Image (tube, rainbow, N blue to C red; front, top):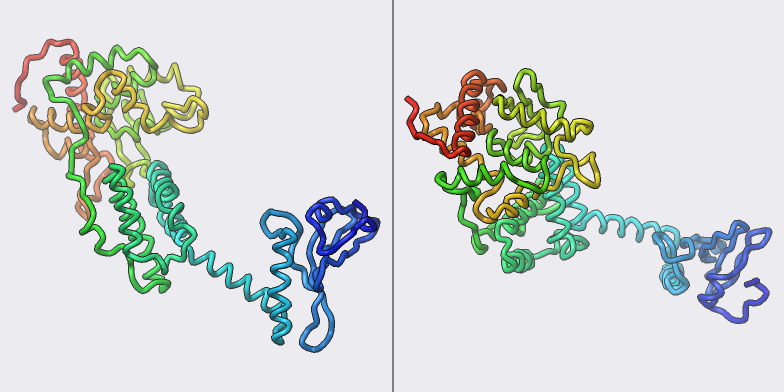
Length: 412
């Protein structure tokens, strides 16, 4: 509408929304020194005319018109103008108080738990694998930020943290609850050591929360392993997933290590797989000798996915690996839900190799188990010759088990 058609003030919402621009910018009084400004390009904003302490009149921009960030509706603009007029009547400069208020709001935003948590995440992120980073921020965004994200972290009481964690426990996610508690305790530690908090409200809460007994990853008894191996060999749903399960069973690697593997990590002619440090739990390169059966499986897989960087590219986005549940779901389809996990193949390999007399140091090196401190600093190719022999024996042994023709013996 045209400005000449305005009938009353304060300006109605319909007027604010439809007021047309003219060849030059103009202001329309809304009331009490608050003006609505319209520019030739159609942009609209709010301005307050006020008297400075020295008696001179001046203009103060309040923000654009609208409902987005840094924009004000009519009601919001009038409320802001009332605050600034009050400042002016008390002898304060509205411009200075507006700046001070915005600074206080910005400081309050920086003091929220979510802001502190994201600062902690950014600090720790560089030391994590991609999977760990995704799981960590995902847990915070799902369980913590909706409750405490916008709260000043110094105002959240231990009792409130206890209530949140116990509500998580009641849903049955005891292990997840423990991880979330540990994350949040570390987040407060960051505030404490940087002088932004004097205490950690999560200290001692673990004494009053449930703890999940330490359990080995689910795996079948050894007498059921032959049937499992045959079931995997006949997995009908996806060839790449079948090959992935066979490699998990054969190489005793972690599911994430094979699922996120890239073709550039493999030298199939040399029978070697070098997992880079950034993908390893201990942040150390890990060299895996490949038995001949694994090389054959990988060559077959290369025919399927070799045009992509990843061994197991996602279906909807080939730049990302398959879902972290892909192997678990495949075992579920085979009827092994709760009885066998991808990680459980590591336990099976350890048990069989130890029972057949292989050197414990060779087994631990194959599983990428290392000691902490100086004792854990070792050559990435440690025991490579011995491990080549050991893993070729293990692959042959699994073939024999699957064929159902096994004569048990103990290695000398």
